[in-house]
Length: 78
Image 1 (tube, rainbow, N blue to C red):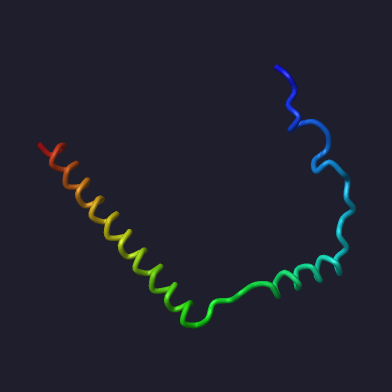
Image 2 (cartoon, rainbow, N blue to C red):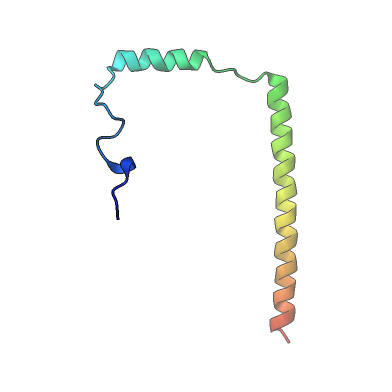
């Protein structure tokens, strides 16, 4: 079996030094400044959409559980 190029050599191809703590902190802060936070209206809309989705899935799973439970009792109870 031939060797794959993907497993040869060190990861990344070059050895890099570790980032210092102050540099890491500055990079984190810079990235967080790029984040676009949702408005309150968007947040409420997303919350309602997620809650409706969860309720619909709970209903589907509950109905399937009830149906399979009744089917199981019908089969095994005689």
